[in-house]
Length: 463
Image (cartoon, rainbow, N blue to C red; front, side, top):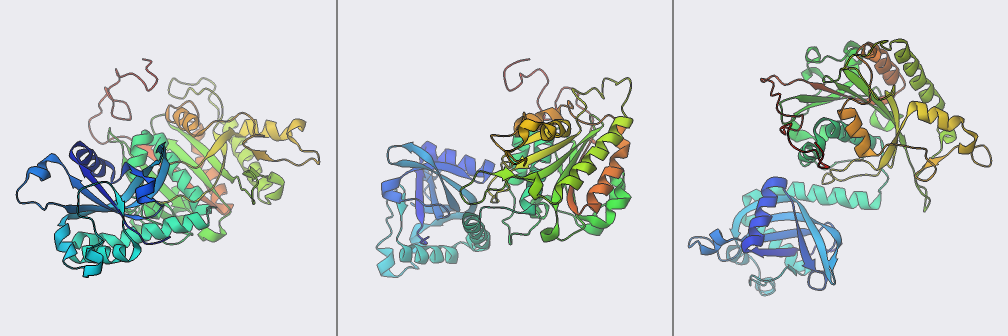
């Protein structure tokens, strides 16, 4: 890709909207003419804003460069126009364009259009000279430029090798925990500050640097209520704590006995203090070879039989501890506590706040599916993909059900969690533990876990 800059310029109400989007989300979306801009993914964008306040000011520059970010191509909006998302935005401090141009050689200066018109694309050599001069003037851009370059390198790496590894499955376990705990808004807020991966085998939890990732001896296990923590202490790699709108805390811990490249798989265990229950998810990768569709073949996975046996043994332990007379708090829609998630482990950039595309199947349904003759192929083999799967739950359905306490163990069953944790670690699987804890502030009974008042309508408009 050529190092050609895109220069976006906004006035009036558009400038106000862009400025607000940057303040809220550190990114914004614009529409550009393909003929004029020829936009590409991973280009550096200069952003000039001239709102009513700056336009009427006597002491400000006539034209300034206010932000620099990285572009990602979006969908077609109309004939000849395409959506452009600009992320990883760095503020430049309203840098006067005239001061920047004074640093340029005349042959480059004459190619820069200083009229406040439509978005433009600058030639490669002019772009390099202008960006260098801009860094010379703006100290904040000099400080932020390494982050922009890391982001571009990460995006280029993902484009060349989209298939992800264990770290990408770990990412989904962390993101799923955030979604269950705080919903879409909190998930996006947390993931917005993810640092770019420096290498493919980088634990995702360690990339949430803005949430002060704690490692090894910094982690206070006494503050956690999970059973079995003494066993996992030697295998803890990192921990992150986040809070929702009511002051409740979600603690996410990464445990792994093996180096990342030798880890066989990932399990997620989510514990809710509200419902006194846990849910466990074992991840299976849907892999696509060549032009084939993403598929999982149990018979080709040498670890599959032992892992399913382990899950069934855990399920048997839970059955022995079922409460004969469930309380209101421990009522569940079903007996399911253990699930398999079949997902496409594609690499995702630090700008992506989505969950991995996939589906959840309860262990009981999976056992029934694999035992059914209809699930076998002509040669007796078993495969699962988007078309051959049995009934399943998508990301939204699963997270909503766990959040509401409709799935999960009873309070009596939770005591056997330490045995499941031990089995997981000994199986050389990464374990992502996510535990919620109550707010230390005065309880506000009028608000739900998202901070909304309880008399508000739910998302579908029903009370």
